[in-house]
Length: 270
Image (cartoon, rainbow, N blue to C red; front, side, top):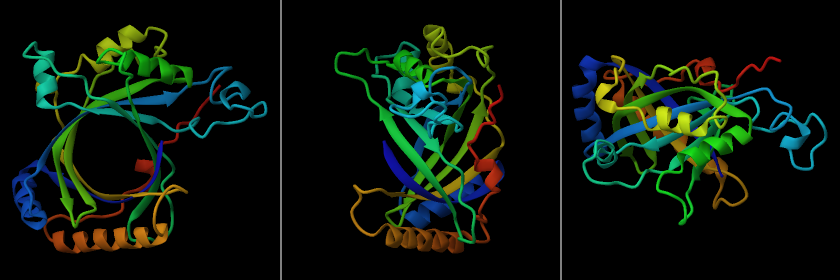
């Protein structure tokens, strides 16, 4: 699992301004936008006698030890390319994209000019012997950690890369109606959850909200395995984001969002 520091700025954009903004960002970055089509399934921790909140959930830990995962939601996402969408409709075959697990922490407070948030990411890879779609296995794995399906949404939009390190994502989402699965522990009926939620969503039928979100961010890899000075990397990332903010000023205003909107914690009640 990779440990990252994500430095971000955000802006909301109305649909009417998207063509102008795409033209401006394309000119600024010198690249055509990359299409973004993703599915996100959000899992929340549950209360149980076993798992992350108990001694059984922390190897070698004392009774009542708390796993770092316990109070944070997990965002499970995968790319949904046109090829995969076509395969779902019976046009050709495409190997199912791998799932990425993202575990954010509480956004940092302070007087930095950008939002800083520690994030852990890992790809749930399938073995060579496994079937193309390992969704059911993933859901059962999360259930073993005492996580259950909370909600899901589709995301579409565009990606750019600026100055080599700044990722600019311009996207809109389509919240999906829970199919009476929000109270069903994922893994108790893994096939139902995997088949209905993960494989039953269609972009062509989704109702996307009118407001778009621009997310400009840099992900700095941290930890003992990294090369170079982490503080220097963060400094450079902040400078690049501030430069982008200045260049887009008057077209879109990139800002630090309300920290509460990025807080992944879940209040657990017994």
